[in-house]
Image (tube, rainbow, N blue to C red; front, side, top):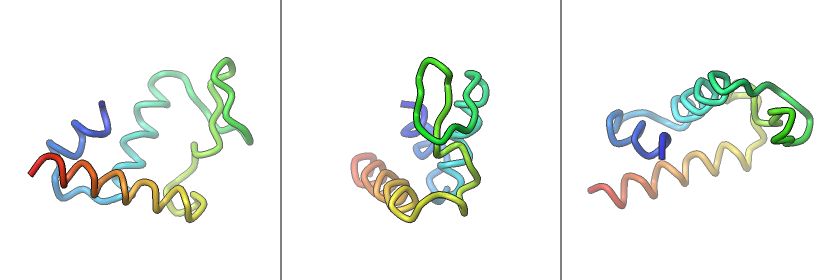
Amino acid sequence: MNGVMFHVTNPDAGASASHENWLMEKEADGWKYGAVKDTEKKEHPCFVPYGELPREQQVKDALFISVVRALTK
């Protein structure tokens, strides 16, 4: 929901801004980088700057934004 609200209130934000918003939310909740996602340890492999994400994760962020924009027009 936070990601959707971020794009509703920041309609010109791109994929990197979306990822930075996600990072801030996760960091505030105590998450950090980990090679594999581990909810108990609060570790996630995508806890890196946007430019260091695997291409498929960058595409996922762009698709998410497209869906939010399409549904909120």
